Length: 170
Image 1 (tube, rainbow, N blue to C red):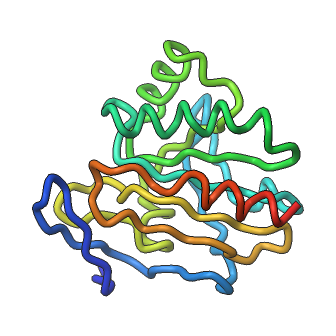
Image 2: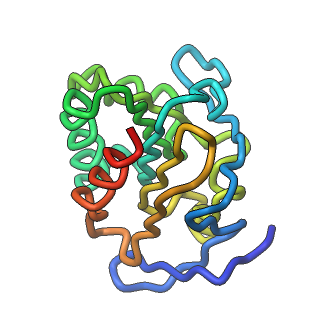
Image 3: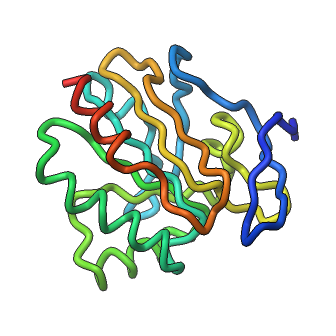
């Protein structure tokens, strides 16, 4: 696996990010993750739409659950924007979380099997085999327009900045 130049922390402890870090202006890589019913889901399944990709280490933690809830609430106000929440949680855990929390506007995907997203976007944490917290926004033409790699995984991403960027793309 390729180590990138990204360093992140969890509770102040340094961790290494693997894969290819993306930046605004890059062509979005068409990854595959596992969705509801264990069906493969691709980024290209949502071509022609603005896509917010919300990355969380695990929905079974407070900040990750809050991040997923926040985007679920925001989805109602964002019009024709698709929100994908991706973690390395098993698809069963994601389904259980969504059912318990009433998450119905965000599409949850598991990167557990192949870490296809994590490696191709530079979000895979080597030491934990979890995704780094962050946000990636892909425009209607398939270009990355916004990226945030959260430096400390116990902190929230900049929701307001990401949502404002997504709205500009409509």
